[in-house]
Amino acid sequence: MGVQGSGKGTQAGLLAADLDLVHIAVGDILRWNVQNHTKLGAQVRRTMAAGLLVGDDLVDGVVSDRLGQHDWNYGFIIDGFPRNERQAEFFLESYDIDGVIHLDLPDSEVHRRVMARRLCSGCGMDYNLIANSPKTAGQCDACGGELVTREDDTEQALAVRLSEYHEKTNPVLDIFRRKEYVVTIDARPDREAIQQEIRRRLHLPPDQPVPHA
Ligand code: AMP
Image (cartoon, rainbow, N blue to C red; front, side, top):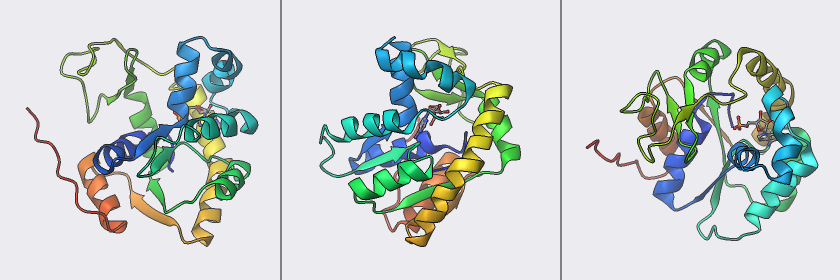
């Protein structure tokens, strides 16, 4: 869990790749549906572009369909869910949770990071023009796809998303804190340092970063 731009997708991806977990990003699934013009995509597009949370029944459906595939023998890591108390109740009733990673980032830093974010229109990989820029400007390192700005990474939508986060998602952290699930990690250092800190706090073996070519 964490505010926009705190690195949820990046950190979840690193953990999933190394620990054989399935990485489920609800926002990615919804964006895929929007890009591919599915019925679900049509239902959520406007809400997402405005920065508002999509309806709970719809999101619970997306999560249970995805987890219903049961391809997660070693477990899963989910990012961007739950985002309000109602979703948290559904999640706690339906699945076993080992831990909650809270990436803590001040709002002042959010703006700078989100405005620098780019997304590959081909494979969905995330870039950040501050800390993680592509080798060739505007082009994805992995698939060569065009890098675009997310439709909801605008000043206006970001303000809405931040207020949704503080109003609706923060109380979820309190629910999980009461169950002693939460480790709070400072999300300001670089991504390798954050990954190592997550692992240290969760008593996982340290990450062995792949050397850059
Ligand atoms: P994200 O990629 O996690 O920033 O999510 C992008 C957008 O997808 C959010 O601003 C919401 O419109 C929608 N979304 C993602 N996850 C959820 C969720 N758990 N509940 C409601 N809406 C969500």
